[in-house]
Image 1 (cartoon, rainbow, N blue to C red):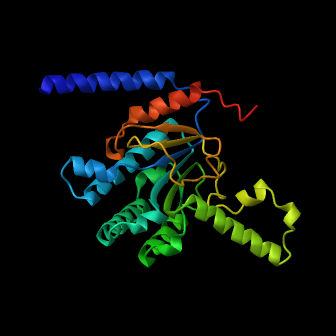
Image 2: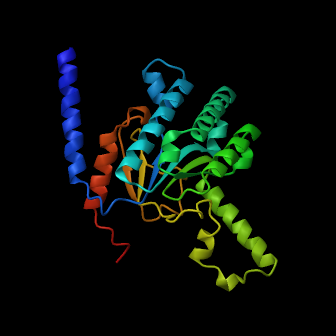
Image 3: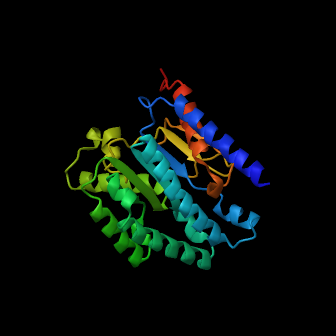
Amino acid sequence: MLRGLLSALGVYKLYGAWLRMQIDSESLPRHIGVIIDGNRRWASAHNMIPWEGHREGAEKVKNFLEWALDLGISTVTFYAFSTENFKRSEEEVEELMKLYEENLREILHSDVIHKYRVKIAAIGRLNLLPETIQELISEVEESTKDYSDFYLNVALAYGGRAEIVDATREIAVKVQKGELAPEMIDEATIEEHLYTSHLPQQELDIVMRTSGESRISNFLIWQSAYSELFFVDVYWPDFREIDLERAIRAYQYRKRRYGK
């Protein structure tokens, strides 16, 4: 049994090294979006309560970020909690908020975040979150505001349509005040008012979703217009470094023509 496990680990390590050799460091995706899916089903498969799956998923987020930083991916955006997720049971939402609070406090003192100079932002209708979470988000963003080597975004109380509605409202106010002429509104104007306007590249090169589901579920729908989509048939807590490396390798093999 042990010999078989060690053998499997050895093969996995060799396969990972082989994958790394095939990745061109000069043509890496700059921005990867991750739709975290399958935490609850993973928990159910392991006879656990749903939020134990979310806790395992939170650990995987840390792993994924370290893998991405090691590869040199400059921006990662995680879809953690949608506006629709508020419809889940009160107990589950409460446990999720506790988990986010724990993780935000941990980020404040994270060696990895400060070593790699990662600028962190939460995106979404943050006013819908508990005040404690909002305050912690402000602290985290303040502590990393001067960093610009890497970017980590966490979508909380987020919806892609809501983002576009909010951007449109801001633009409409400027038009109403006479600060902006309607005929001057273009794609760049809208992008300046999106939640992701702070990023050097808002457009997503890759959108990944775990658990085998094949939809983007209202995630960064403006920014993902030309994204390469990868649907991975494992629950998020079971996602591996080689799954990320295979997606990057496949991305580099694809020809992105943008309609040309």
